[in-house]
Image (cartoon, rainbow, N blue to C red):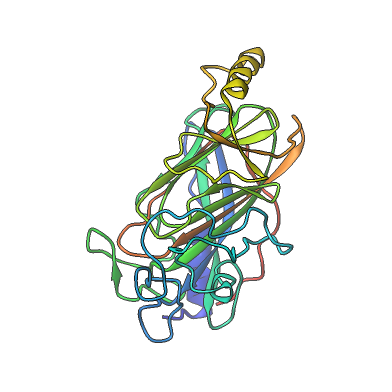
Length: 304
């Protein structure tokens, strides 16, 4: 269903002005939602609502469907040596997920507000919903898809946020949800929840100039870029954690993975977040972070 411009404009006005949360410090970030036609119907996109059909991979969390570096356009890059159970049809089809392509997707801005539950800045900022459906009744429309409660929803969409923050040792970023999520800091992938799956959690902590992936059910494979925390390094990190005056016990342990981002305290960093909802019947979305995130660049030109 394509909305008229006047109707769409009113919808956007309501979508991008997130309600303030009383008695709390808030961070509001505006990203871009892109809507796709479901791929199990004529004229639909091959990567949405097609998983586990011939040639479209299988369900489950899959790491390394995208490369570790963002492309020169600031978008995730299709990994040509991806796992065999990957659920992206092709490099061309994936290239449409986070770019505006006339006739293939429709886009609009959408804002989320993270709250720390306090009247002062600092602590953990959170946004959480088990019904992340930002474009119900908008753009291509709901396409006869229902959630687990039987409510008609608009599935088959992606969401992109481009943000920035100032690095301070001990900061963290955690996401829980479905389906795909790829997070990059300074253009390097630090969280990978690729695939069509139930809610999965990824944790990243920034410390000692590194990005550490910890408490992961499926860790990054080690490589020239991704290293495994040795028992010796874990002990050193615990000492550095205490010396830095950080609260609690250092959560980084032997076997966790890390990427050397050469982070310097007080320096500005970018965080780029890419989400995809590709299959009924749920859309879980939760961010918990101590990063003081800010919008980093203007939205792309949108169209209806």
